[in-house]
Image (cartoon, rainbow, N blue to C red; front, side, top):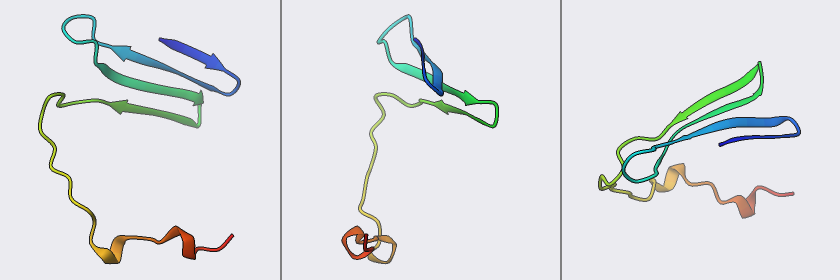
Length: 64
């Protein structure tokens, strides 16, 4: 998929065999602001845990 609208543009690569998983996202918004996001390890268990309390920011206390 290639999507271009305004200043945002990029390309999403999707697997064409097996499950249609996204594989890579290329951002080409501008020459100075490009990026690559690779997707790996589908169907692999992921252990998530909350961060330690000292790394949590209460956004309601940040003000306006």
